[in-house]
Image (cartoon, rainbow, N blue to C red; front, side):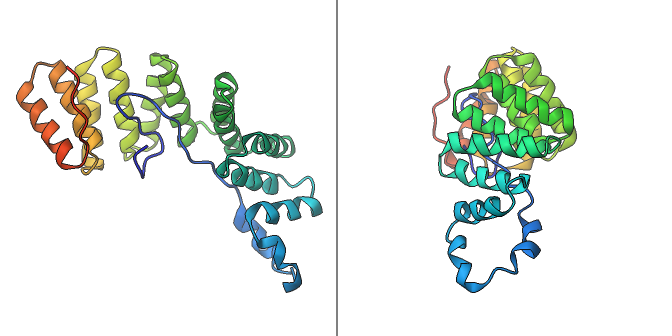
Length: 234
């Protein structure tokens, strides 16, 4: 995954956003300020902090959500799932929690549950970019081009500066044998991130599809100069 992008794909393979959103951590500052110094041991790590909060406030959804984020980051996906379930149980209209649980389900190889949760997040917040990108990337991986295309077109309307979304849109159009639309999409991505060699590499493939070898070779050289050294497949 190229740094700085949530939904970036490589060589036309979709990957899911790695961003697991912690929710509302700053709302706890005023609550936690009263803790005396002899209780600082609970701050040794985030798990200890949020476990301590949950012990005092066992129905607080934000504490479960933030502990789930910590479990996710450390690879404890079963524990993250349980905390996501609690977060949704206690605050069922928090759309970020469904996106987060969808990411956990992906780690647990449950694509259908992940798809359901990304959809639930979007039902609560139709313009939620992370869920749009994640659902589109999952649909791309499953080979469902039409729904992926629909989500990506929504995403670039929500945030037309999202270079990775434009790139993924180009990937889908190329898979659907529409090189003209793929070229238009990648041409929207490149000005937004001119130093991403993958974008030039992918445009070189599109130019090759369109029998424009001079432009394909030029982009391939640019990709190599930017550190993307893969060879263009014929």
